[in-house]
Length: 303
Length: 301
Image 1 (cartoon, each protein chain N blue to C red):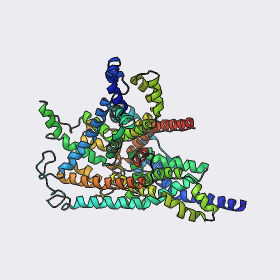
Image 2: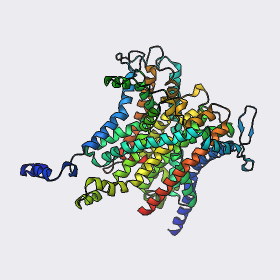
Image 3: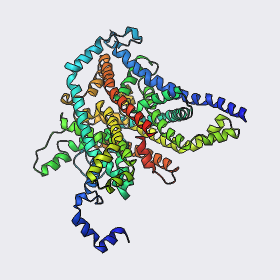
Image 4: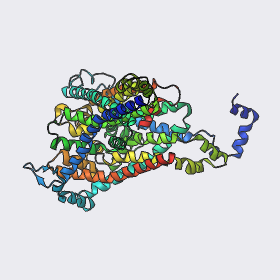
């Protein structure tokens, strides 16, 4: 029997509600806050759900529902399967995302190991520099990279190479933050034990540290993939010409110009891809959890 | 044993810096040097045959005429309106963020109970939905014959043309776009408040409203500042939201001017000078935030 049932049986509840007005009762249910929260969730997600719904519209309209069809994925005229520019943007986004993961993850993991275990004044300066990209507005990052590629690093052309370098630059900081929190939580004891037992530094890293870090390395790779797919500003400053556009640039250019549900279909594919990546990251972070805080809360903390 | 410990330290001392080196070099070459390039272009005194600025790599060659002109144009000239609009929109969007985001973060962190995981997942979801997609969704709804105008029609309200340079639409779109990034840092700070402090306040006979203002709010001040700064920085530099939901010169923000001068014309020195000015304004907030965090972590120790 719960406490409230006991109180109800003893007639305690009516007595309390008579003496304490409901707004003074600290144990009342938070109806107002609950309503605000659910209204916010509805407001934030419903428009996207409707946009996804219209990607399956059986007609050209994006505001009048004309029945279910997959024609805007394939193979009506102007659908993703038939429009080369839409396919190209999808291909470019996936290539760029994968390449960014391949470069940014090792770079960030090494940086995290180096900066966490190496204690000196230089390392704290480097640490500060590595975190600044996280708080710098994207427009500043984008325009600075654009100006340096146009004026100084002229060997690297605008387009795929410049976009890759740009995406890696903002991704390294994500990897650093995620892997570093894992490094802090495992502490230096395991690799020192390996060293005391005669392992070389490289061997201690390879056989002890890397396996322990693996879940966070995998999670950060997935998060880098999702952020790279979703990036708009840095890509827009660096893409050069139309052959290098990514999905967000295509959506941005077409949203006011030629609106057909094919655009919604493209957005839906992007959404599914980044959700898949984040889901995998979540699963990766979960594998190390035994009770305590959930991986979702960990992801929330990286923000 | 002592010898092996010394070896140990010697080898490690070289190892960690070596691991940190590539990433550090990368960030210097692609984050610090680019920022220097912005200064070199903003302070350039010469133009080439296309009318584009020739960057002045040597600080001794820096000319401040263009930058001075941009500053005075920003204080009382063609850029003034874009700046004041940027400030106004940012402020309005932040007010909405606090008004909506604080209750949501508070409820999720402290009161959601069994549904907490689900609510947190739903609040995090927009982080991973492309920003442009989220704006595209609203463009669909706000069309002249879209769902919003249809819904208004039920109440006999005449259709509104939302997407033709409407400041209200821009502010709402900005708030909609950045609310998820505001809620999460606030959530993690509210989540860390010790429940016993709130119970103590209650046990001492303090009502829930006073408990909120005297206990919860002061304890979440740091989280609120973090959330405000993290949201304000990208908000003030935003240009795409504006282009998507308005596209009219009546709602131009400073980000739109930067994009215009850097990507759509030869006067890149004007664009670079505006980037520099924006960074200076925002650096003030960033520095304030960094000092606050440092102080908080020192107090915690």
